[in-house]
Amino acid sequence: MRIIVTGGGTGGHIYPALAFINHLKTIEPESDVLYVGTERGLESKIVPAAGIYFKTVDIQGFRRSFSFSNFKTLYKFLKSTSDAKKIIKDFEPDVVIGTGGYVAGPVLYAAAKLKIPTLVHEQNSIPGITNKFLSKYVDKVAVAFEAVKPYFPREKTVFTGNPRAQEVASLEATDILETEYELKKDKKTVVIFGGSRGAQTINEAVKAALPKFAEKDYQLVYASGQIYYDEDYAEFAKYKESANIAIRPYISNMLEVLASSDLILCRAGATTIAEITALGLPTIFVPSPNVTADHQTKNAQALVDIGAAKMIRDAELTAEKMLESISEIFSDESLYQAMSEASKKAGVPDASDRLYQLVKEIKNNE
Ligand SMILES: CC(=O)N[C@H]1[C@@H](OP(=O)(O)OP(=O)(O)OC[C@H]2O[C@@H](n3ccc(=O)[nH]c3=O)[C@H](O)[C@@H]2O)O[C@H](CO)[C@@H](O)[C@@H]1O
Picture 1 (spheres, rainbow, N blue to C red):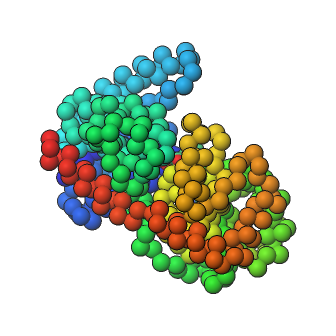
Picture 2 (tube, helix red, strand yellow):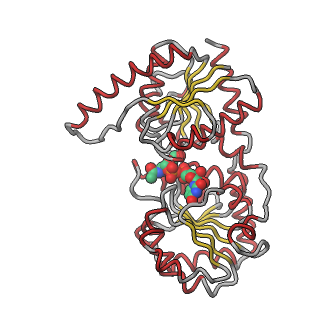
């Protein structure tokens, strides 16, 4: 298969794309993949490093309210659509798929206009602006939450789950907490992080809770995000010698860490949710209030409703609430088990297989 994959900006759009590419390569090792992203997005670092052929177009986001910069955006959209057409004609893909983020707009639009089979993948429970726009033009919309289906044309929309889930589902616990975080392998462990770049409210709460964490009989792995790590280094350094606390700016081996831990407290980004549920981990969500249409609250609510997670609103997060909530789950084995089972049920361990079937379907209908 010759395939163009596009999507980016943040990890939440890129990792599902990479997971699908890896899956495709195991099924069809001869397939040719081109990833189209932007120079500014995180994809320009992650994708070439993963050994995937990478090209860029220049695009910026639309403001939801009127703004003069939208004229510039419109110009860039037209220009990037024409650049994308050139890239597509050169590469001659069988299909083009997008995983959201502004860059997917011109690439999928150009592909649809060129009559190439197209698909978008929506990770969230409320659609992003780009996927909503594209849903009129593409052949299929793959979704990771049933709740998002009504936002898209019914006949095109199929539930697949998030491909990242399949990558994670088969992982077993390893020694990583011992070898890379100087913690104990068999102690209960909570992992706390914001989105891929950290989160200020979570950081404030963790900082205030550190003296208490140091006295707990469970362990803490905390990823603060690079910005907060630099700002609060002096505070964090005090806990370097604490036997049950490990603080890092970023967890680069997140999947292994998740697979070796017991409880998560984090933002409610869709890709993080796919990973957590694939592993059947109980979670305390603190949804980001700064995202389009408050979609993280809706992402989190879907898991709270089925008993897989607890939620603390960003505005209500304090050190005390954080510690209380963790203790409540760790101290009640039957609650822990029930949350874990509910989380596992929400996981979609064959998401990549499902997406692959859909991609083959649009390819064969071309
Ligand atoms: C602020 C914002 O617009 N966030 C959106 C963005 O989130 P963002 O890119 O932060 O979101 P996700 O939570 O979906 O994904 C984060 C990814 O980074 C990884 N990770 C995180 C921290 C760390 O230290 N190490 C690490 O590897 C996680 O395991 C996960 O794979 O895209 C998601 C779409 O998928 C949306 O749902 C989020 O609302």
